Length: 101
Image (cartoon, rainbow, N blue to C red; front, side):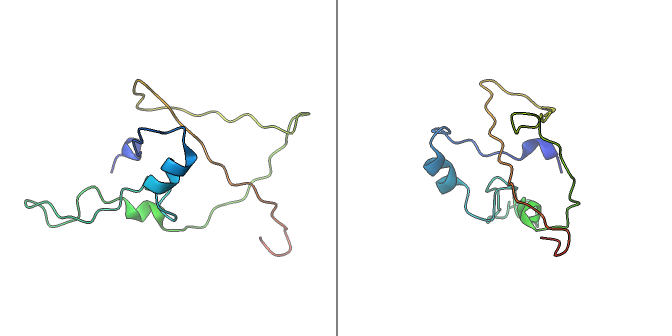
């Protein structure tokens, strides 16, 4: 499976309500690409990326913020398209070592 193809093309992409409407809750990682139809020539769901929405264990890492309370994140675009637009959503929560949450 190509990692580069996980996207949802939304005409009004600057409208967060339209984005939420196009990508149902729980389907952010698959870009809402949860297959529901089978191709007549294949025995599997077409364009189904629902496996990307399955929760997995992640390793927590400590990050150090700069004086402005920011961190630099480098993103490597492997398949750029024009017009190109990306929106990154990073959940921020404090993890307490004693509870693991």
